[in-house]
Each structure stands twice: as C-alpha cells, then as structure tokens.
Amino acid sequence: GFDRDPRIPTRKDIIVHKAADEIDTGLLHSFDAVVFLGGLTGRKACDAVSEEQVRKENVITPVRLAERMKKDQLLIFASTS
Image (cartoon, rainbow, N blue to C red):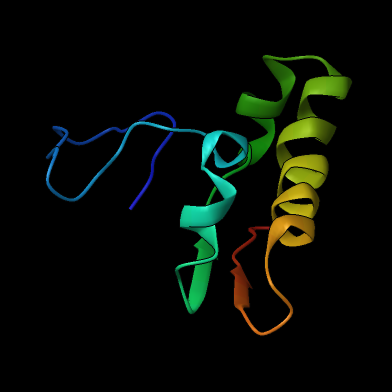
C-alpha cells in the first residue's frame, strides 16, 4: 500500500511513503481496486490549514486519482463527511 504520512512504523515491504498523485500511473493501473483513505478529517485538522488545502486534500486529490484510473478499476472512497 501507499501512505503519504504513515502513523505506524513503516514496513518497507508493505507500505510505500507516497501521496496519491505520486503513484506511477502504470503501477496504479496494475491494481483491480484502489481504496482511498486520504484527506483531512475533522475540524481541528481542517482548521489548521487553508480552505484551499482542505479542498485539495478532500476533493481535488481523490478526483484526480479517479481520473487516472482505468475504466474497469474499482475506487473505494472512504469519507467521514
């Protein structure tokens, strides 16, 4: 898997430190499904950054990820909102 900001000790064999937009498109296309767990959660996290950054993290990034995926791939988008 990929994690931009891993909160658990990174296991290099299963977690790669990358943001969604840093994942190579060819590698992205190699998966049947993508589970997007990114974004900013809660008022505290959102209040700590600009509205522009909140929009980028919670809207633009997952939309761009979906646009890069193949038509037959499944995107599971988890959101707290």
